[in-house]
Image (cartoon, rainbow, N blue to C red; front, side, top):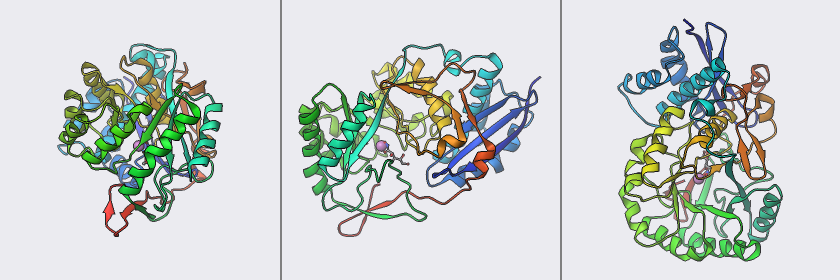
Length: 402
Ligand code: EZ4
Ligand code: CO
């Protein structure tokens, strides 16, 4: 029987950090899994190398579901982003192996394509309204049918979501940068710039906006109400979802669709949001939510309540995680949209292949497994470099949700 011969945890930083799990079987089949948790990379690397790799050796790589149960239930300490990212990496690597052994792309193993391609949205941003409008014009030229629009808020130093140069890289410093925040300034400005976007470009594309957990429920309700005529595809993370019940309050006031999930990692983090129909899109990622095995269970629950998928796909999920997401997206009946932020150039030197983009859609391709390779020689030339997300402080100096 083919068993797991070895597993290696690889860390590389081709301009940003990625953690990758490589599983090799006794038959010499290699599976890749993404284990990148932005700003806490080495915690997951240690969880895998110190506590998971020794358990994998000699086990049957074809028993994906059993491996998932073993790593989730078997450890006693359940859930949380570090655990669920580590479990996800093993899960992804085993799906990659199963596909390679079968000679089939992972989406075929999951039931086959339900659509021709995966609708994606990308980011447009600006330091002010004119530069946002320019950026949207450029993004539209690349064929995107769905665009997330963010602009720096006047009087707020370092607003989240704004590109510096060609890319937006949230983990931007060796120690966390201190940024500022004013809810009043944001609530005054954001609806106005989103209105200008619709005025200039019309309604024939999906317009998305990320609130990044910055509002209270009643503030989010006010925001959602004030942009109803702009027909946003969604407002993302209007308030932290630690208290799932608080979304009832937002729902009572606005028909602006709601998307939640990028910082969450298990079905238990969203089950109330889903079963009470408090959100429209669930945004957990394959990489941070226990892999394909767990995320497809979350999407299956969501389908019963007409909640669609909208997975997180930032540059801090590696191309392996993005490939895995694209396979799942192609199959599930309640797919909504997939985030596709893209990567800085050096990332291509390490990660080879992966989904292809055309005309606003991604396709995972038909190579066996996940369809992506990792160049270990290139990766070794980009050593780990500490990179942290910023923190946000209100104008009085107190810490706000980032
Ligand atoms: O700030 O992934 O929707 N996307 C986002 C991201 C997050 C980063 C944090 O690691 O909000 O840009
Ligand atoms: Co977000």
